[in-house]
Length: 467
Image (cartoon, rainbow, N blue to C red; front, side, top):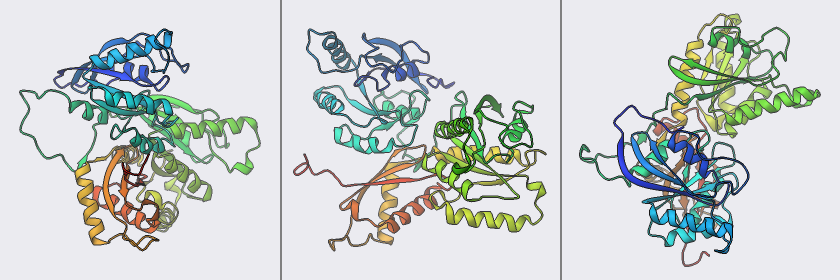
């Protein structure tokens, strides 16, 4: 639930109203902010009918929060019309309105209609994109710009993701504290502090018989999951709540993934499906490979899938104690990664022995480090200073129309993984090679090695020509 800080809680005196069309996750966010499950949550639209109030908190900021019915365009005399009236009253009573949209479903005509009404209200509005934990949510974040409510704050209320960004947005409306020091320059890179009470989602994946379950048992210090020399011993994705050096971790041991052509058994197909679901829900994925036959095409395909899902990746090379020419094997693996996994250059590679426990702690340190990088947020000011430097050093090429492409503005729209939008005069014409130049520059300047970086180019909206 909502992060409860041990630092002094500041009562902002603010009232926040959570509004939006039905089934975008308003009640889930309400429960997250107040720190307990009070509002009923269900996939069926229209479950919430009356406004519900509670005392909410993120970090050290305390406020009142109102959960409202899903906004529907209906006559005043109907039940839906009366629910809409309650929502409008809640917005009028609030100091800030949080308009939720569903990043999975994308921006709908009802979202646009609701945004038009909110822009006419005197209440400040923060646009919040919920359900951004999976692949495919970025398109809705970029599309949300057309609502005219500014940048969308990316969150996943169910999993507690994005609360740091929501905290920063709400804090701008809080009255100044008597203890506040003079304003200081915002640091170029902001590292959100992980909440130790929220488990880090960690999945262990790989081919059959690479030692995944052996590693899990070694980490836990007990024979928690079944192991053996036979491939395919693990069938279900086994989820275990665990603590490592006082850090809560939700550890998932998964079934081994073979080549698709070799999978004929129905149970194995279900097991592999659970493995890919575990990847989608993870924050960090450890890909276990066998040091005696490391990084074959199937394992590289798995690694690319993890990166495409936007997860942080660590490659654990098991059975390292059996390798004779370690320098040669490690160099071959690094070369293979550099050529086949360029979209996440610098993925950590850790050699270990799960059976003997050698360097297992080094793997966990790599997990925590890559998780911090995956959560990195770079300030808009620092990004635009960097963009000016990069374009001055190597100007963008001419477009197909023989005009110079101009990169006007840049902002980070979400973390987990770091995702950026650049507004360009001719976004569609920017070559892939120049985008790679920018991506590599981001990695080097802001220490973003090892995680996927997503850059989307957008053409600025012209109010005189665009609809």
